[in-house]
Image 1 (cartoon, rainbow, N blue to C red):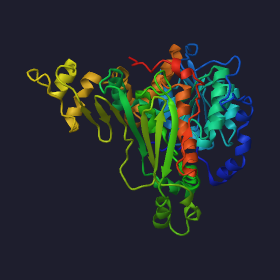
Image 2 (spheres, rainbow, N blue to C red):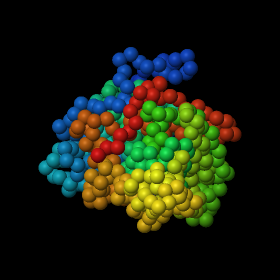
Image 3 (cartoon, rainbow, N blue to C red):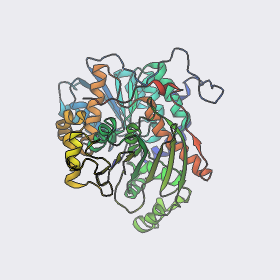
Image 4 (cartoon, one colour):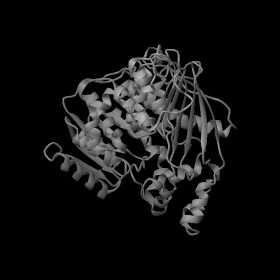
Length: 493
């Protein structure tokens, strides 16, 4: 699905980046010392604001800057520039050609509205100069994973809301520091999980809220996406693969959990009033596919052939246990020769909805079904106790018929925007236009700070569990108990 070519890094830049990794986190280092409570959870600092249901003050106009305009960044930039009520004030990337293309994209969208956009490039820290000179209200961050935490923290400390590509951060420590910064500055930090805005995912959320699947007990999620072709970018020294390949070689766990996990977590209200994340166990298969690809596709003289991929794992399976005892299976595989899938399964006492392919199975009788379900399931009035056939999936046209009754109101309102502006079938456009809408109206965001932290925490927790042969790892309570009073995500119209 996504090729998160965030801010491209050359071979020289990559070495410089790794060398400076300790120093690049000046924003992180300047955050408070995170005083720990007795159980190890950082205490709530005095004067901080809980961001679970937080709505920032309304903005008549949203001044937006963007960091990283490689492969993902231009999609965000095109949506931001097109959205009413925005002004693009800054674009930053390592490369001059990238920022020049971005500037032209903004001008093509609305030359008058974005006439004052400034560009910044050539240095890993050029974004700090952009923050100082342009003073944006919000910043979209589409850079390599290691940069998400320091950049988000710097943006919030500069007075801007941060909208961060997935994952929010790659370590538990950095997630806590992002949370402390957001709570102390009263600035949003939303992880840009676009899959939550897919049509099927939104419809399943609506069906869950209406109780169609009954009491929710189990979910399954995945990111199965063969991406070995990005290793060619590692050879060239620019592009997503220039940095992602090194993650494949050096880490073992679920390195990219949020596309599948985000939607099912919101179906189940995890971290929002009903239930939350409790613990995780994780296992990985041996690593074979990257080395095989390097040998067969890139050859003996490639840089990739010199990497030791055996430290990683090709397919990772993690099981999450929630506070209420419900379960979520999360899988990740970016190297095996198989079709793309996010899995997206939600299972309850009245049935199951699943994706890839889209399908539904429900257990209802005429007596306990709504008129809509009676029609969709073909339940006969003269046999009120006859159960629907949940031994077979409702697929194809039968599945499509559910859209008429259960399409999410937000999708129906923004369907034309999705079709016009696109981005993974339109889910990107809905996400970005909706985020701008929330800032203008002063509404709480659809994905709050803590959800991004919980979903992203699967990566460091799975790495630790794999290293300990599947030993359980407890999720930190990033809300510090306040999830119990956080409102479930409403069905937004």
